[in-house]
Length: 391
Image (cartoon, rainbow, N blue to C red; front, side, top):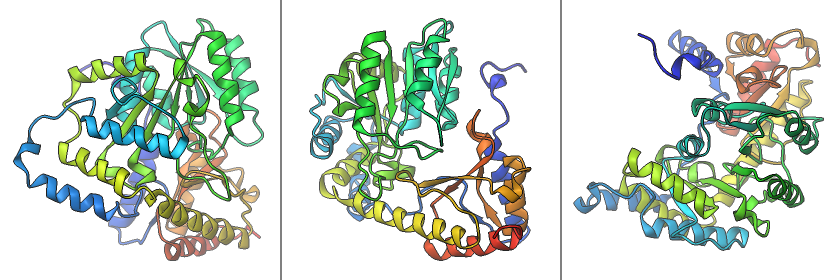
């Protein structure tokens, strides 16, 4: 049978690594998984208790609202007021999504179609590249990462693009490269969007994961940004609620309304007890992201310091729950997938190959900080055994 859209997708390289990890574990190996960015930190206790309570109420078992119940949309706009000083209308500028990934994908359906184009950083989280393609649009890659001037690259890619892109996808702090930007950058890109009549879509998944004094800016902090931008916020990383699938699209009222209209045909929203518990998480555990942040920062330091001691020097990221590491010089003749296979087989450590994140990712691997300090130290010892040329 011939399928639509699916045949256009390449083999999922990150899935290859997952299969190798599973195979090794079935053989009895203790593989430490620093590949898949699946948060291991528990969700807020107050939210878990509220979820259990709400599930007991049969009124919550019925269909819910695809755009999110009113108090949930009010809770996220209150969070933006407290956290970023941004005023948003919960009725017109906030829509709930079933996680940021679903929200982004359907947003691309709303904004793009055949004949359109989107500008996307590369390397990038895979859905940022494939979301526009699945909507029928073309992608214009903009290089991002160490030693890259992203804004200059964006200007160059814009001039080389025809048709002119309708959408610019952004995501800072960035997965996988961990690149961070300041508010001045957001001001420049908003000004660019105004001048060129293009919409900005900012995936703000790591909004609360900034370290060493760095505070990730929301694009909506720029005055007037809602004229040309929407932002995706999620409880996945900030509140460690990955499996709950609660995200939001915020900002430009026309775009938010269009997304809500599409979703009204596609889903009935997240299970209502989850929405209710999410309200409690944001309202009654507003400092939980700080506790999550402290854990990831400590794990970052444990990994960076440990690898440094064995001769693998890596720049300390200012944000995200990842470490983007160049393949060390004694092994730089390896492709990233081959290098990751070596680590699984000889170090019993799974990490993600850079090539899995698109053009520009080759030569790097990504560590996810999803194991405790003890396991990270164990991973470092395994890497030292597997890479004797280090140091």
